[in-house]
Every structure is written in C-alpha cells, then in structure tokens.
Image (tube, rainbow, N blue to C red; front, side, top):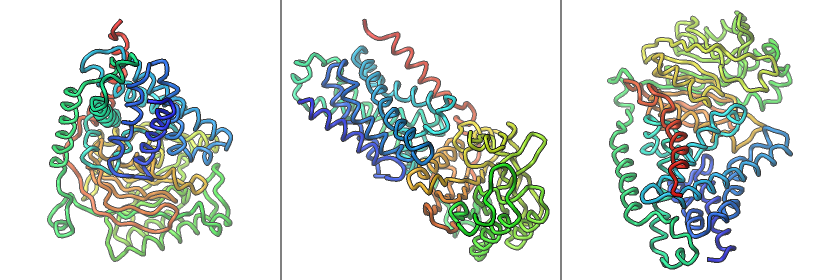
Amino acid sequence: MKKSTKLLLSALSGILLTLSMPGFDVPFIGWVALVPLLVVISTSKPKDHYLLALPFGVIFSIGVHNWYPNIFSPALGYFLILAVGSFYAGVVQLGGWLQSRLSGWMKLLALPVAWSAIEFVKFIAPVVEDWWFVLLAKSAWRFPPALQVLSVGGFPALSFVIMLANVAIAGLVLEGLNPSTSSRQGVKGLQVGKRASLITLSLIALLLVANSFFIPKAPSNTLRQAQDNTFTIAALTDLVNQDAEIMATGEFDGTKANSPETSQAIFDLDAELTRSIADQNPNFIVWSENEFADADDTHFINQLKDLAAEMKSYIVADVVWHADTGMHDTALMVYPSGEEVGRRAKINTTSGEEDAGFSPGPGVYPVFSSPYGDVGLAVCWDRHRLYIVRELARSGAEIILMTVDDDFNASTTFPPFHASDGVFRATENRVAMGLGTTSGISMVIDPYGRITAEGEINQRGVIVGETFTAEGQTLYTRFGDWFGWLMVVGLVGLVLLRDK
C-alpha cells in the first residue's frame, strides 16, 4: 500500500469519526470510523505510526473543536485545534506501539485501553478538563442500547467498547487482505487474528442486544395517570444573551445582579414563554442560566412565586445569590404553592465567571422532595464534572433540573457536545433530567438516556417532555470512576508486560 493511500485512509477515519459526533450524528458510524486508520497502522512499521495518524488527528480535531476560536482568542483557538489533533495522533501511536509488542488476544486490548485511559485522564485533569471534553463515547450519545454501559463504568467503559469494536473489525479486514502484505513489511505482529476478532464482535453484539431488552418501554400519555413515577418537564430556550433589546436595558456585567430593568425584561420574556405552555400543565418548568435577579430581591422573586402558583408548577430559575460563602450563580426552585423550595449554588464555575466575581458553590448536595420524586438542582457547567450529578444521585436525587447557558458567540457546534454531557450524566446515574438553555439544546431526558423533548439551537421556544424516575442506584453511582482508573492501571500494566 502506497504511503499516499495510507495518508488518505487516515484522513478518511478523521472524517468518519467527525460525522459520528454530536451535531453530525450519522448513526452507528463511530463503531467503524477508525477501521481505515487501524488497517493503515497495522500494515505499517511502528516508527511510521505517528505521521500516518496525523491526518486523522488533525481532521478529527478540526471537525469537533471548531468552536475553540469562539471561546478563546482566534489565534489560541486555532493553535489548540492543531495541538489536540497532534495529541490524538500520539495516542494512536502509543496504541500501535503496544499492539506490536503484545501477544495473542492482548493485542485486541492495546488501543482500547490506551485510548480509554488517556481520554479519562485528560477529561479530569486540571485546566484542560474545562474545555477538552470531546469523547469517543459521545459518538453513541443518541444510541440508548450502548449508553447503558455508562451506568456500569461511565464514559471510559463506553469508549473502550467502541474502540474495541473498531479494532476487531479492522482485524477481520486485515485477515481478508493478502497475508503476505503485512509479513513482507515486517509488521505481522500487529494483527489480532480472525478468531479473536469474531469472538469480540459477538460479545459486543450480545451486550448491545441485551441492553436493548433491558431498557424499559417509555411510558405513554395513556399511562401517565396510572404511573406515579411519570411526569412532565418544560424547558425554556430564551435567547436572552442574543436579545439586543434586553441587553440594552443594562447588560449583566458579572459583578452584581442584573439591573432592575434587565431583570424585569428577562422575567417578562420568560414568563411569556412559560404561559405559552400553560395548557400542557407541566409539573416542572426550567428556565435558562440568565442571572435573572438577586435571589433575595423580593420584588422579582415574588413575581416568580406568583407565576409558579398561577401555573401550578415547580419553576427553577437562575439567580445571583450573595451568600456568606460569596457571590454564587444559583438555581432556585419554587413550589406550585408559591413558596421557595430551595436553592443550590453552581459548583463548577469557569475561570471567566470567577474573574467576574463569582465563587464556586460549597460542595453540598441538598435534595428537595416533590410528589414526582426527589429533586436535585444544578447550573450549566455542573453537568460537565462527573462527580456533581453523581453526588446528587447518592444523596437521593431522582430528578435533576439544571439551568444552562451555551451561548458562545451563538456557536452552533458547541451546544451538541455540551448537551451530550446531560445525556451521559442522566444515564450514568439513572436520573431524569430537565435542562433549560439560553441558546443551546434544551432537553428532557429519561433515566436511560432517551431524549423525550429537544429544543433547537439559537431558536427561542419552549419544549415539554415526559419522563419518569427509576429505582435504585447504578454501579457507577455507587463506585464512581472505577473503570477509568482501571484503564489507567491497565495501561501501565500493558507497558510493563510487553514482550521484550
């Protein structure tokens, strides 16, 4: 195989994996996207792996991180896109190097272990964890049978399974090629074998089929009255941050609550959207992360309480709370009777928010009772940390309601990646979720990761979706990121156990 052909096949994998990701959502392509690249790696000498994997890494990074220039300065954003692409090529190089030095069925594990371990570490590593959250697992964010793996081992387990499928399929492709091709190039040791590949693919198929039967049938409207654990959530997309008229009243500057004029304008808009679905009688209504008003300003909070009583629904709004622990971006919920249920400050604040005066909320996880299940509150970036929703679930939350702001210069490519975090956290912990956004994808999600209602990016509106609660805690909720750490230990072990 010519080098130019190998580079084109590597680039093809970059394109295919991009198409499998949130926002593109070509079904099931993530399970085979890496096969062209893996065939290239497995028919090439280890010293050539990095260069051959570079087209894959750069093209994939351009496809899935093209929103970086909207968040960072343009120069830094484009530099990071290329740097991350180079990093992905290095991960593939490491996997190929390990595969060439292992024997038997362990060859199958080299790249899945290396990818999952490194992906997990960079997801939780300080600094990079805030903005580097594209995952191989997210290629399956709209495929519930695969998502159930999250409830056992979190996203590293799902990334492992997807990569393992790619490696096994590549093994079958290689078996179909002329065996002398790789042996002449001195890389026959990279091949994983037909039998091991077939067994692996059979086990993955069995897992997905079993998961599809494990997921309960979604409750229908006819069952709603008969099932106490079924309820509806409405979620707003209010586009406040893109509304020139509202911003002209006195844009929030990050050091105090909105001006009275801005607070009133936001309330009037969100109240109008809320009343537009009054005939659907939602049990919960979730607003966006818009720093609507000061949490203790009775003039505006009383309006919110009156609206909840009018709608006969729980309403969750985003407010600024000047607490003893600092100024917090906070989700506040009011009863249908017009009283405050409770509030919880945003824990995972961004550096920009902290520069503007916000403080991370204390690490407490209160849960509030409702007739439909126990409720936990969160704000936006809280869904990006693995532990926050998990701790709420450990505290007994069955429903998570979250205010969200996804407006980065009206990006259309960032919101799907952030939305997938909501689907993952819901499935990992078997909680129902309702997320209202300023401009992103407002969603209602059931405990098995099915999206029952979904808004449009950069389009004002309200969605209403039906969901339900699930009993018990998942293995992931109880034991946390055990699989991710297992992959880290496994990677070290594979390096130490390699053939001399």
